[in-house]
Amino acid sequence: MDIGAFTPFFWMVRDREHILRLLEWASGARMLYNYIWIGGLFYDLPVGFEERCTELVNYLKPKLVELDDIVINNKIFIERTANVGVLSRDMAINYGVTGPMLRASGLRLDLRKVDGYSVYPELDFDIPIGEGKMGAIGDCWDRNHVRILEIHESLKIIDQCIVQLTTDHKRTRDFDPQEIVPKKIRPKAGDFYIRAENPKGELGFFFRADGKSDIPFRCKARACSFVNLSVLNELTKGNLIADLVAILGSIDIVLGEVDR
Image 1 (cartoon, rainbow, N blue to C red):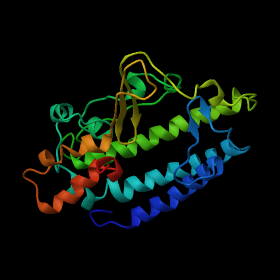
Image 2 (tube, rainbow, N blue to C red; image 1 turned 180 degrees about the vertical axis):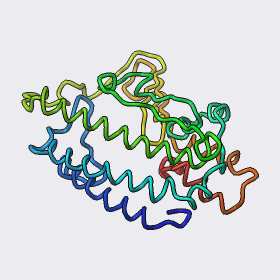
Image 3 (cartoon, rainbow, N blue to C red; image 1 turned 45 degrees about the horizontal axis):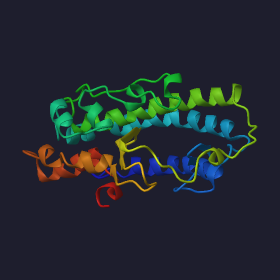
Image 4 (tube, rainbow, N blue to C red; image 1 turned 90 degrees about the vertical axis):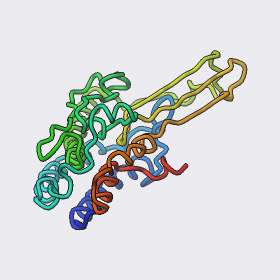
């Protein structure tokens, strides 16, 4: 959309609406869900959610093929993004870039695989990386292509989760997940850093505890978009002003993470 193609964007808004309605059905909210709590979910999925989710996955799979045809493999899109805003693997590492931007530069790093947290070790999915098929490895086209490939992997993950939910999962629960979590946590003195893979990259939280209070001495959030945007100056060197829009779009920032 940023470089002039509005139709695919409206298609995505249409399909996004189906996703938002499912999330609203499960949590009661379209955007700010407050559904995943420390200790578990706020409450179980509504009856029939798995079937509706399967229908959505089956609906989206052919839509992604259309998206490849109309956008990713479009001659104009390729000319506007291939060999533009090239981010080398070494530069990405030095700037602390993470997520799809880092993987588009050729480094197969995904915290869901590296740290193996949550249920991800039980799931089978690939980690797409940039291969420079239309230009240089780590260019704007690679960053867009990797994200499209990751949508395919997300659908694979959802398919596997639905199978587990409909075969092994029991809907009975006789306790509130927050009941087992203390209202105040007083960790031992020391430094703690917790990280997870997010759509934009590595989201991390650093805490320094003094061991005496439930209020941390220091607390800092590592925002993916803030770090990824820091490389913009390097990506724009030697490019046209018109390419700046494509480069910024390929970084895919959330402004609230940058201006906070």
